[in-house]
Length: 446
Image 1: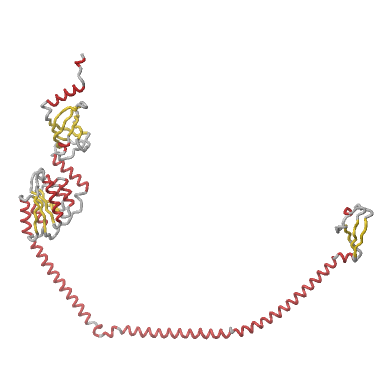
Image 2: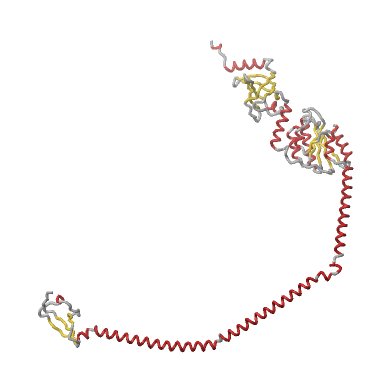
C-alpha cells in the first residue's frame, strides 16, 4: 500500500522531465508584457503576462548582456527560450535566451533610451567648442579603405591645401569598432597638436552605424578637448555621435568643407584686409598731417610770447593784490600796537598802586569807624546785660532782707516737706551763713 505514494520530489522530477523532453517546449517564441521587473546585478527575474495569464521568467547574465535596450516595467517584448520546471518551488517558468521590443527594433529602442538618458544629463546641450578658422593639422578617425577618407582629403586639398590631414585608421563596423574608435579619439587628444578632429563613416543600416550609437563613444566625444566634426552615414541618418559632437556634417565632403576654409578666399580676404589697413594708415597719416599743419600755423609757434601774456598780466594783478593785502595787514598791526600802548599807559602798575592806596586809606577809615561803632554797641549791650543780671541776682534780693535755706548737704529747702523736727539747716544771708535746728514743723493749709 505504501508503495503507491510518491514523494513531492519524485513527482516534481517526473514533471520536470516531461517539460525538458517535450520538443515543443525546448524552443518557445513568446510575446507578452514585462511585469515585476527590477534590474539586478547578475541574473534577471521577472514575469511575462497578457490580459489572462502570467508566467515567471528568468534571464541569465550571459543572455541579458547581449540585448541592446533596457527592459522596463510594462514594455511589450518578443522572447525566445525554453520552458522548464524549478523544483524548489514547483513552478514552471521560461528561461529566456533572447529578447527584443515588440513592434520596435531592439537597436532602435536602445537608441531612444540612450538618447533620452544623455539628453537628461545635458550632454547634447553642453557648450560646443568652436572650430579653428585656419587649421594647420586635422585628424580623421575612419576606415583607411573607405570613401570617407578619400572624399575628405580631396575636398581639403582642393579648398585648403596647406592643412595637414592625418588619418587615424579605425574599424567602423562590427563588435570591434567601439573599442577602436574610442582608442583613436584618445590618441588624437593625447597628441594634442591637432586643431580639428573628424570622425565618420559611410552610409549603412542602423546595425552598421551602431558603434556610433554606443554610450562609451558618445562620452569620449563629449570629453574631447579638440573640436569634433561628426559625419556618420547619409544626410538622413542621425546617430548619438552626431548629437554629442561639436558640429554635424551630412557627408564627408561637408565635414571637410566645415573643417577648412577656401584658401583663395582666405588670400583674397588677406589682400582686402591689407588694402583696408593701408588705406586706414594713409587716412590716419593725412589726418595727423592736417593736425600738424594746424598746430604749426597756430600763434603759439608764430608768436610764442602771446602764450604767456595773460599769465604776465595775471602775475601783475596778483602782485598788486599781495602788496595791498600786506599794507592793510601792516596798518592793522600798527593800530593794534598803538591801542596796546595806550591801554598799557592807562593800566600802568604805578597808577593802579596809587589808586589802590587811596582805596585802602578810605577802607581803613571806614573799618576803624565800623570797629568803634561795633565796640560801642557791644559795650552798651554788655551794660544792659549787667543791669539785667543785677536785678535778677539773689544777692540783690538778699540785700533787701531775704535769705535762702539749705540742708547740711547744700540742697535748697523749698517746701515744708523737705525738713522735719530736729533737722539742722543753714541760713544763707547776704554776708554769711547761720546754722539752726528745726524745733517745730507747721504746715499751712491752703
